[in-house]
Image (cartoon, rainbow, N blue to C red; front, top):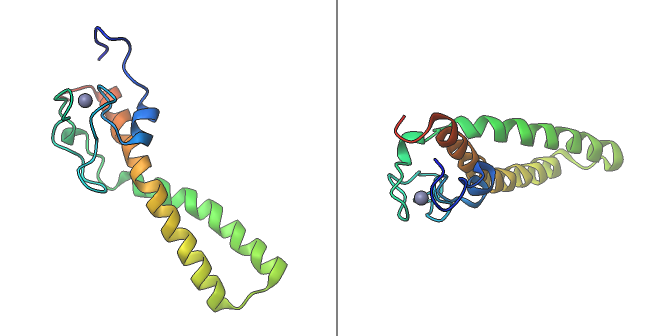
Length: 120
Ligand SMILES: [Zn+2]
C-alpha cells in the first residue's frame, strides 16, 4: 500500500479527518456516513470497506461509560429533577453521537482498508 511518495498514512489520522486511507487526501465520505465508491484523488475503491453499523457499537460503549457515571455524580451532588436529567443527558448523548460516529466510522473503514487491503 505504500507508494513512491512514502509510507501509507496512519489509519487513525485519515479516519479521524475523514480522508482516504490510501492517499490521505481525498474525502472518505459522501454525506455524513455514506462511504464514497472510489477516492476522488487516487481512485482507491472505498465502498467495499464500508463497516456499516459497526462504529455505532463503540459510540454506545464510549458514551455509556461516560454518561452513566456523570449522571450519577450530578444526581449525588445536586439532586436535580428527573426532567432535567432527561433533557441534559439526551442532549449530551445526541451531541456525543454526532461528534463521534463519523470519526469512529472513518477510523474503522481505514483500519479495514489497511488490514484487508485494497480489493479484498
Ligand atoms: Zn485516495
